[in-house]
Image 1 (cartoon, rainbow, N blue to C red):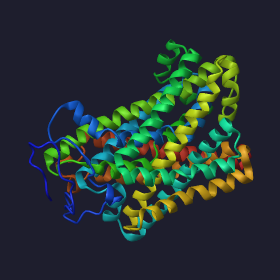
Image 2: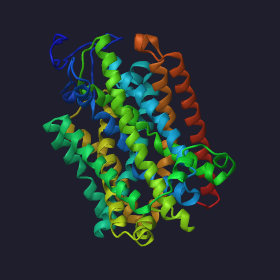
Image 3: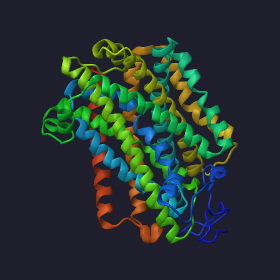
Image 4: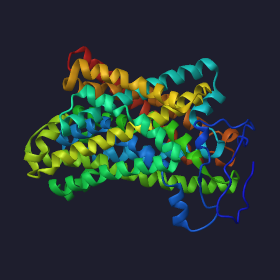
Length: 460
């Protein structure tokens, strides 16, 4: 491993360096992106933070995807500001888990999928890969459909054509990554800021109650006592933490060319965690804004609006702001397209990490994109707008099934001193992580049972 002297500004990209604990040759997903973003070895705080800014934003888009929109709209229109506390708690859990994911990638130079391949038997690894691919495809279905809905709302395009157009994101990824990973991060950041700007306008137009918002950030017994509120609250939690984000973050953080020493890793963890926390704070704002908008625009007027199309239709006349409906659709398009971009990258990391399967980038990305695009086009053609809400719910159920299979290995690996050395989780973080894993698993199982039961009764 060739490392520049600590007094220099940047480090040479690592090539063929050894794994921190295992000593095995490093085999990263997206090897062409490994260590391509230089960071100051020493220097000003803001300059270093800027160098690490990017992976957190790319991960944060998974926390504001169209699957979240459905649950946030339902929660706000039915229960006002009461479920804001659930979004806050979900976001805090997400911050913890993404910290563990980036730490695993920085310390071991192995992403979560590779770590699973190192640790478990081949049958277990293959099963985990299948489950993860299904989860990514299910999540991508909702994201692609969300983008197609936005195109339909903005331009009147049929859903099938919208799905086909969104498939062009694979070309965007290839073009931007050919120019450098920073260009891809900048593109994602632009879309994230577009979503944020749209909801800043919506907040100003809806004039929500500040007292109601502050009160909603505090948990209330109503959430547990009211079975309907509890069901939506669990849906919000299930839609917030995405399993593919854990694989994604542990992989793309290795694009940063930090010193592979204990000091360099500690510094990388510090700034990468700062990037992740700030980015997920922005994701909290977006999710909270959707719920607040639904509460201010619909709940206060006694309207229950749980579909994206209905919200788009009613926003402008309800708020008396002509741009509200248009900006709502623009934000949905940016959110859905962003999520499909990062979902494709996650699919790449998962395929190479679990299977150690190497292929040309354009072939690999066409495969991961095709897994989602083909079913999305079929569903859009067969069911149209009427099937969208069920599709979003279905995607969250599939994600709830897979989430624990990503969270439990992540917590296990980062608590292991054999794998993490001095960077293993301290006791208090380990306890928080395991409690979070148990809570997520238990609540998602409950959500799954309730959803399937509802389908059996003909309610879904």
